[in-house]
Length: 325
Image 1 (cartoon, helix red, strand yellow):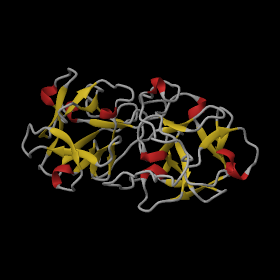
Image 2 (cartoon, one colour; image 1 turned 180 degrees about the vertical axis):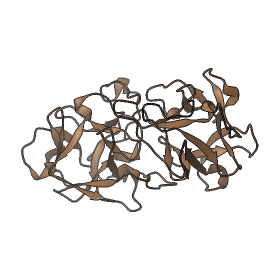
Image 3 (tube, helix red, strand yellow; image 1 turned 180 degrees about the horizontal axis):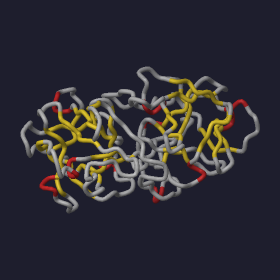
Image 4 (cartoon, helix red, strand yellow; image 1 turned 90 degrees about the horizontal axis):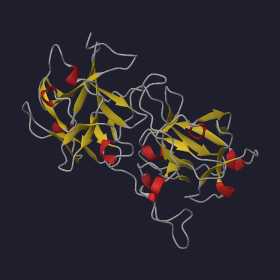
């Protein structure tokens, strides 16, 4: 049947709180790339064009109808397009009652109007009902902030890339440690931040300093660098991690995974079938299936110290503790 889960993947209606019984819909059931996502009355049958799923390996939200990704077009409205690796306009996540951009965490889905046919756009978070949604699992009760993992071996994991392919990705403005003077403090994302139900999030503390593993500058782009920094208030997603059902250690900022070859600084990348992206906890060591472990470069105790992949030597700069948030 059209509404059943396939291969264990859950599908959801995305229901607006600003419009009774209206859900996110692929306009006119059109399968062409570029078709608008709109608000429409919830159907009782033949509703595949109103079903959606979260795909954490690619960081996208997809239509069951076409498998295309919700994509913010130049006008700011959402349309359906095939997956494009590293396209920031496709990077989205469910966070509490909002759907927010992974690239610009203060920008969220907003309904332009309340009637059938209303478009959906990306706007600054303001907490109004037009930005609030519920997620109704097919065969289950409505929920808020639902987030699911694809089944083992599922999803659309991009292929491995070298860090910073083509030099095109956004980079921190200065290397760490900052050369000379007071080190600038990375800006943390503002706006909504709610724990995802059913997901155990944790800090990763360096036993050398008590500082935590952090995504530098809260940069949600592929290639963002990993450093240590003093633990911040308000549970910023740039300092929180979780173990996903697929076995990957993932950042709560964008669901990306740590990646590095031996001797290189760790960066965040979409999950891929590459041992340099597969990390596991072994006591106080965090090892990679490629061989090295997480290491604070040179035993540097300062904020902004680089975290690298390095051969395990039992040094205190290679020992870590999980602290659940």
